[in-house]
Each structure stands twice: as C-alpha cells, then as structure tokens.
Amino acid sequence: MRNPRRSYDENGNEIRPMDLASMREHGARSVMAICQRHGCGHESSINVENWPDDMPVPDVGLKLKCSKCGSKDIKTIPDWSDREPLMGLR
Ligand SMILES: [Zn+2]
Image (cartoon, rainbow, N blue to C red; front, side, top):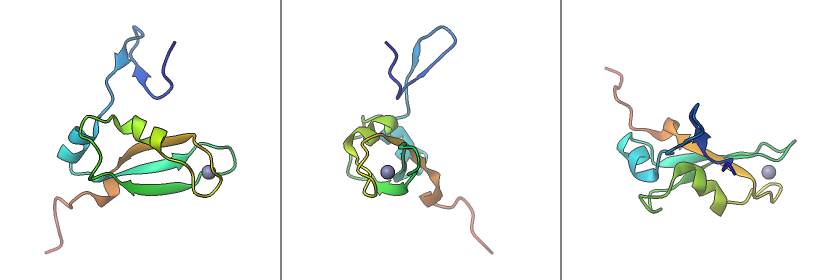
C-alpha cells in the first residue's frame, strides 16, 4: 500500500523525501504546515531547528495538530521564505 506522504516514480518506487538535514543545507529552518481539512486550510510556519536531522519533511505533519480546527491531517513542505537571502540590496 502506498504511503500518501510519499511520492512515487513511474515504476511505483518510493522517492526518498527530503529530510530536515538536507532542507537545512538548502537554508530553510522552518516548514510550512497546511491543514488539509476541507474548508479550513489553515497555514502556519513551524520552526524545526531543534527537530532530528533524519526526519523526513512530510513526517513533521504527523506530529502536528491544526490549532484552528483540531485536524491532524497536516501537510508539511519546506518553508523557503525564511531562507537567508542570497543577495541583498546595495
Ligand atoms: Zn484546520
């Protein structure tokens, strides 16, 4: 049975999700959590600096609960918005 929190290639093999270590390597320190309950869609950025390196980004959602509706169906993606800017204003 397929895990809904994983992606699969055309042969049905699970694609290894990004973990927090590689997300941090790319400069993101937070994940964006999005409530999947229909009609809610509440979003929140979660700081995961102290979470384990080997935790897959999609699994962070397993530990979260929507503070608005109480749903535990939370999707988590890397939050690139808090990334260190690669370039600044002159
Ligand atoms: Zn919600």
